[in-house]
Amino acid sequence: MLFRWLFGKWLRRVSDVQPASGGVAAGARPLEPDAPAPAFVPKRWEMPSELVGFHRLEGFDLPVASLRALSTRLARIPRPPEDAAHLLSEDFLQRATAAELAEAILAHPHIAARMLAVVNAPFYGLAKPVTDLQQAITYLGLDTVRAVAVQCLLGDALAPADPRLKPLFDRWWRASALASQLCLRLGRRVGVSDPGAMVTLAVLSFVGHMAALSLRNPQHTLRDASLDFLDRTRAEQDELGLCAGELGCLMMAEWNMPPAIVENVRAIDRILVMAPRQMDPEQGLRTALTYYCARVAERYASGTWTRPEQATPGELDGAEFYQLQTHFMIQPRMARLAADFQNEAFRAEFDGWVRAALS
Image 1 (cartoon, rainbow, N blue to C red):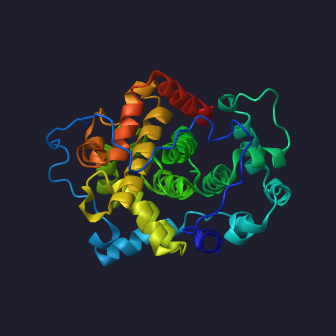
Image 2 (cartoon, rainbow, N blue to C red; image 1 turned 90 degrees about the vertical axis):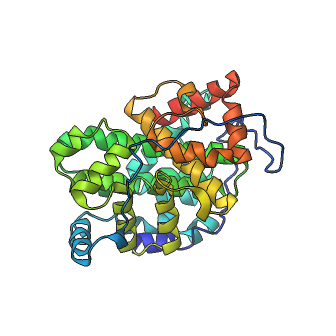
């Protein structure tokens, strides 16, 4: 099965294809994990009234009959094509040359086209367009290639049939692309281990949001499109029994993905309501940063945010950021990232990342 083969061993580190000078890591300044944090005091406030008493349900909270009925509906959503399994299997990625990987991708023209669009985005500032897929793969590096391929495969399977929902699906598509790129760049900047794994988890965290488009009443989906993350989570849960993030985890379990992967994805959206007491510092940092990237990407993809100042960690507004601001921002590396946003050059660099991912 595609996802059993695709993700079975992805928790182990996969070496990058080294990008050319000015590639995806250009301008990144990794932070030393033990370096003193700059002076920074994150915003603190009382728990918003919208969060008080709100319980984010998970699969085990539902009655057996309700869970079975929901799983039956999820099973009707098509799975990604199995003939693409070899494209992202770990064994293939480890042994494939750029030429062999290019040949495999060319069997899926939409993935090849997306790869070329990414490498030719304004962010990279190439003197002339790259038209050779092998060159694009070498330049982008394996983490970005993997993220683009996963996104394309998921998009094929999860696109809703109702044409009215296409703009919303496109919004999730753009958000997943931006979230994956922010995870890669910011993960490297703060020095997390294996930022490539964060890239994959960020893309997977949007599975349920895309699937919910096909499960909810279309009129309700369109009505709720402008809601913030908490209110939309509540609306999805009221209508379907579970919110979109949990629906995605159910789907991935049905696809026989490893439980560790499913739990890591579940932990991302769970930050909406969960303090970090259950996490060790490194896992808390990775999960908090991925949640931050996903929510920021959603705001940008919807057009709600347009300026890098609005994404400054530690100064975010809204109930969806309460746990992140109040608990996770006390980590020194998150505090240093927040301090970076005070630098005009970094804000310009961040703005370039956003524009490149959404172009």
